[in-house]
Every structure is written in structure tokens, then in C-alpha cells.
Image (cartoon, rainbow, N blue to C red; front, side):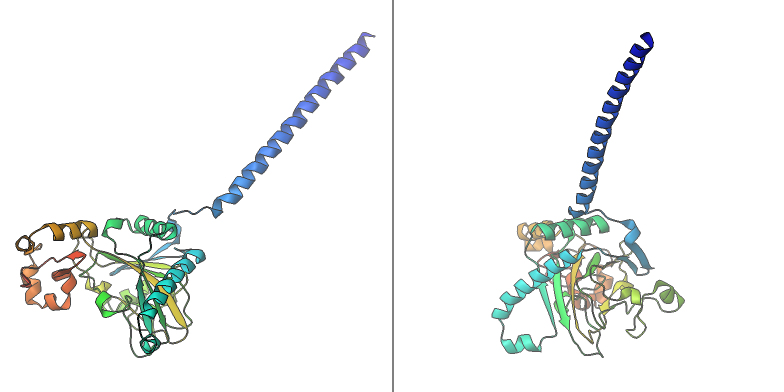
Length: 313
């Protein structure tokens, strides 16, 4: 009789533990399923995380870096849509003949929505350059052009700033190009160093790594690390010989733009007539006032470095 009671006690304890472990397994399975759902949802959330593994150093002179997949397809399409919206407004103010004859268009994004703001933040995070030193993003569109001429990556002469005018430049491809559109560095060093860096000054020799690929971004520094000017950073692009190309540019100037506007508006004209670099007289004598007026003389959003030597005041 005692043996039977002992057996029943063991059986009862076993049943209790079995029920407990079954319940525990159900709870654990539920937690794992919830965790999987959370992990699956994470990629859908916007992220400004910079992935160093996607960045490739292309050259040290000039200093050029490539970020593979900097923008998503959705972000590229959004910038293109903003460009098209601004294009419709500008087209209404221009003659149909002028629009038809144009081979490229340059639109400044004045819209600061959530997506554009996120892109601006990501650019600053990658370049380590403050947003306050950056001009608005420009969206540009080009279609079939003359094959004999290289073009500015800024779309027009007014925005064709050389390395002596800006601190850094970011070029982002918003679409692929059927043929043409590669970035060029005409003043880059020739010889073996250029071949090893895959930076070319000839469209017929340009590397596939500079081919326009949707979402890719180039970062080039227009100044040496010691802040001296780097002429080799002067860049252009091969003509679009087939198809079309959308891209965006972002430039960073040496001084905060908002602060510059405030200084220019609050300071007397006599006080603005200064040289901010000891080399200004030498640069002016070499003709830099005419070749690089924005850097030397200034503009509405850039305080000229050599106003006195250029005799503008």
C-alpha cells in the first residue's frame, strides 16, 4: 500500500513539473516570436547610421571618397520629385523654346521636409562637417549632350566653384546613366599615382568606379588638411551621350552661412574692407580676384577672404 502511495506521489509531482515546463516552453516561444517580429520591423525604420564598410578611399590627392548606397531608392526618387516640382514652377516662367533647347537644369531645394532633413543630417554625419556651413542641396538633371565637351558638376557657370572657394563637395547620383556622366578630376596628378587611384581626367579612360550609380555618393575635399587650397580637387563630369542623369550636389563653405549673413548685415561697409589671409596680396597679383571671385571677393552668403586686395571697397 505504501509503495502505491509513493508511486502516486511521484506521478503527481511529475505531472506538475510537466505542466510547468509546457507552460514555460509556450511563454518562451511567444517571447521569441515577439522578438522576431521586432527584428523584422527594424529595417523599415529610417536610419542615419553611417556604415564605414561602404566607404572607399579613391584618392589622397585629391582626397576623394565613395559611399556605396548612400541614399535609398526611395530617397533618390523623393529628391527627383522635388526637383520636378520646382522645374514645373520655373518652366511656367520661361519660354517653351528656352526649356526645349536646354540640356541641363539646376534646381535649389528650398523645401526642408523630413526626408530632406534626414539626408542633410546623414551628409554631416559622414563628412564630419556642420550643417551651418553647408549650402542647400542642388538637384540637377541632364540629358543627351555634346560628346566633345566636359561639363561642370554644378550645372552652370555661377555655381562652378573651384577648390579655392569651398571646403568640401558632395555629389550624389539620383539615377543611373546609360552612357557618360562619370566624375573627372582634370587637375589630378598624372602618371602611376593616377592609375592606382582610379581617378582619371579623360572620359575614354575613366574607371567604372566613377560611373553614375543610383544612390552612390562622392565626397571630395577642396582643401588640404592644413586648409591650404588643393587645385587637384577641381572636378567636372563626362557628357551624357545616351539617356539622362539626375544627381544632387552639396557644398560646404569655410564659414557658417547664417553667421556670415548676420555679419554682413550688421557691420559697416568700412569694417568689411579687410583681408583675412596674409597671402591675399599675392593671390590678387596672380589674378585670383577674377578667377575666383566668390572666394576672394565674396557673395551674399560667403564673406570674401581678400576684399581689400581685390579693391572692392
